[in-house]
Amino acid sequence: MSKEDKRTIKELNLTELRAFTGHPYKVRDDEEMDALIESIREHGIMVPLMVRPIDTGYEIISGHRRAHAARLAGLESVPAIEVDLSRDEAAVALVDSNLHREHILPSEKAFAYKLKLDALSRQGKRTDLTSSQVVTKLRSDELVADGTGESRMTIQRYIRLTHLIPALLNLVDEGRIAFTPAVELSYLSEEEQDMLSFEIAAADCTPSLSQAVRMKRLSGEGRLDADRIAEIMAEEKANQRERISIPLERIGRFIPDAAQERAVDFIVKACEFYREHLNRQRDER
Image (cartoon, rainbow, N blue to C red):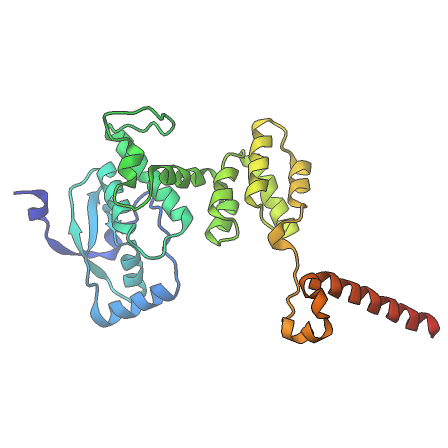
């Protein structure tokens, strides 16, 4: 009889459950959690948790959100399936069971992929993330990528995000720092990232890809300091330039047909003429 055949559902007290050590997915009290709590109150837990026995009770492999919602819903116990898995086998199962979720933060993917990669490496799989040579065995990053819909290179890039300090990683999760610049910034030292985090807060702006690439290069050359970071971050970025949008139907009748193709120049000259008019009025008072 296989392990699958031996699995039975049992009721476990919530006090017996422990979060998986190094669990990469955040359990957030948001609208989705509120909906899950209401569903549990009305229908109970439809899908049992998956747990494995440990010395202090049971470690959750799949179902951290359901366990949290059950506590908030006032339940004392939850249905669970006990499985006999090693720590590394459980880590792989945990990552695979959560990657189907609709909303996964970049930081969650980063630490989930790293957790699975580390688990596979301890199981004897190849973990060389830099070699480009053809190998007969599947690389560990290829095994991590299998079934995710993402390439081996993308898996590597997500894992790079685990080198970011929390302050910068939070900005990635919030969408303020894009994924590609974030990968470049992950090569900065913690001290350099701290300086960058301070400058981001002070200047209220985040680095573009070109700025991130330059900071990475300067860091590699040992020439990145607080002054250089401030200088780079002070540069005007195209997406930060203020623009005024004026519907053509509002001003078209003031612009001669011959000047339509040079409308911006015409408007600037008109503004200059009007400013001179205002200055003359002020001087005459």
